[in-house]
Length: 252
Ligand SMILES: C[S@@+](CC[C@H](N)C(=O)[O-])C[C@H]1O[C@@H](n2cnc3c(N)ncnc32)[C@H](O)[C@@H]1O
Image 1 (cartoon, protein in one colour):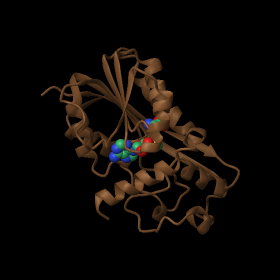
Image 2 (spheres, helix red, strand yellow):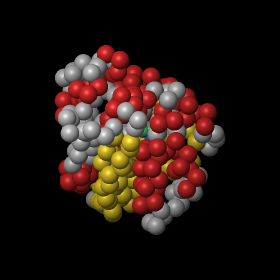
Image 3 (cartoon, protein in one colour):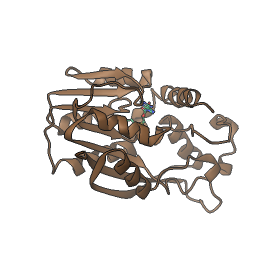
Image 4 (tube, protein in one colour):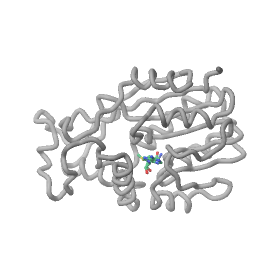
């Protein structure tokens, strides 16, 4: 599938989730808190900051409450999620509708780049990271969380995307001009009342489209829910495997 079609499908699924995202994003909120906690011992003041893939602005809210700054940008390509963010984030946050793969800021412009649970949607991670790196000032910081390999062991391989391992992510970060300051991975198990509810949570978050999969993304009502889960998965739960990375722009 050409990248522009894949991206419009990703965007479509997130846009469809605009009314439900905030009620379901506990794992995402926990990840953004962890990412900021990894950053704060290093510095809690940055002049110009940006939250890429800000969604409904939940991650941006945490960012601006915990990091002192002069100017903040919140960027997302899903117009419906961004309009929710716009209502939550008042001046001086500047919400911008943009793809994180499109050049948006001048080089050496941002002192901190933040991205919470967004980079798994990049179709070319190295390219995305190189662009984010260009925006950073000398020794600027980049902190992000991202689902990593091993995510959702309850779901059969043909129904989920292939994710990078932590070692792969470090390799791509180094190739893209970052040095890694700190990182770790953790598991977050979410329990549900039924397997159907588990899948519904992914739909409510807009995360029910998987680029590169051969299955046809049928609506929840049309699928056999048990077919999506591995046989041994008796308990209705989803195990998120998430990596948190703190990096700095490497000097040339
Ligand atoms: C799981 S949500 C995370 C939202 C927010 N950061 C949070 O923590 O709640 C992932 C977000 O990535 C955005 N996204 C995916 N691909 C994108 C792209 N190419 N450019 C900009 N945003 C993108 C989606 O629109 C969605 O809002």
